[in-house]
Image 1 (cartoon, rainbow, N blue to C red):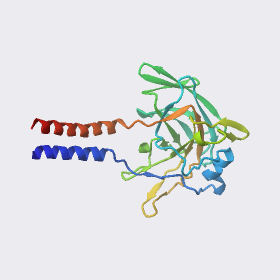
Image 2 (cartoon, one colour; image 1 turned 120 degrees about the horizontal axis):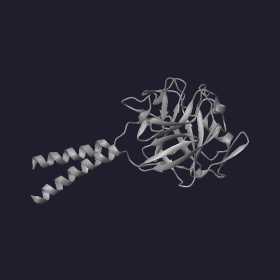
Image 3 (cartoon, rainbow, N blue to C red; image 1 turned 90 degrees about the vertical axis):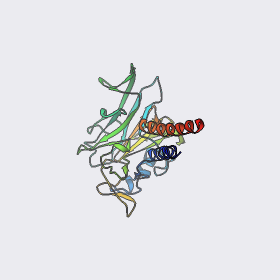
Image 4 (tube, rainbow, N blue to C red; image 1 turned 180 degrees about the vertical axis):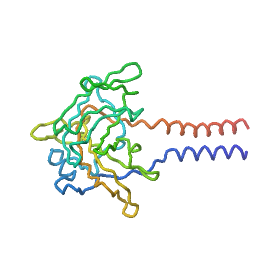
Length: 269
C-alpha cells in the first residue's frame, strides 16, 4: 500500500508542475513611449481609425502560433507603421512552428508604410509550402509564428519562450495582437488608403529592443520602452492556433497514466 501511495503522489506532482509556465512580461504594452506621447499605441490606433481597440486591454492571448483562416484565399500582410530608430533595418516574417530557424522574410528594412505581400500556402504530403512571389519555404505543418529581426541581429518571436531576453525566471513578450472583430467600421486607414479590419484580420504590434525585468518596480526596464509601436503589421485571413504544446500533453498523459495504474492496482486488491 505504501508503494501505491507513493506512485499516486508522484503522478499528482507531475501533473501539477507540468502545466505551470514562467511569468510573461510586460503584461500589456506600456502607455508611455520614448517617441513621445503622440506615438503611444492609443494615439497610433486612433490615427489609423481603430479607435474601438484599447491596446492595453483588448489584445489576444495566446498568440504564439497562427494558421490560415481560409482554404481559398491567400494570407495578406501589409506594413502599416514603423516608429523606430531601427525602422530602416528591421525585418519581419514568419517561421516554422517545428523549427524557428526555418524562416520566410516578408518585409525588410527598405520597405515602407503600405508595402504589401501575398503569402500563399499549399500542402505537399505532410508538409506545407509557404510562398511569397518566387521565394518558397517548406514548413513542417500549416502552423507558423511571426518574428521581427532588428539591426543588431536580435530576433523576437510571437512565441515568447524563444525570445533572447528571457531568463530562467521569466519570459519577455515582444508582440501583441489585436483582432478587428470589435472594430465598428471594420477598417483602418493609412496615408489615405483603407484596409479591411475584420474578425480574421489582425494588427500585430512589435517591440524591437531587449528589456530587463525589475522585480522591485514589477516592470521591464533596461534598453527598451516596450511601447510596441516599432512595427505594426496588418495581416488578413489568419486565426490563432491554441493547441497545447506537445510536451505538455505528454507529461499530463504520464500523470494520468499513473493515476490509472493506481486505480487498477486498487481494484485488483
